[in-house]
Length: 169
Image (cartoon, rainbow, N blue to C red):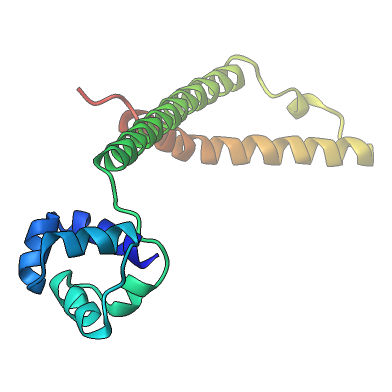
């Protein structure tokens, strides 16, 4: 592990064996032997290696250190770009859906108002002597009254939603 860690950290710092050897006051072959696992630095040199590589001794002695490769970073960047494109498409799709739902709501409100004005309310001519007729007539009248009061507000909201969700040029 030590040999692999020295080599991986040295490469990640962009140092050659010769440069590390100069920093540690040893010959390049000593660095090569350490990295091949043919010899082990003593405790003083281990501390000097950690200082030269700006890495704690525990990291040098610990688990295997893998050096990040440029290909890995490029692959991660491509994945992030694909995710961003997918999220943008989903957002645009939701916006289009909301746009057309607002349009459909506007059309439904206008159609319902047109029907109410074109045909007179049938319950107005009913005989209200029977209790069932009274309940149904009052319920229909309440629904119509509520629709007439709330339709303008809903229509304004639907028009605003339609305008706010249209595609910007």
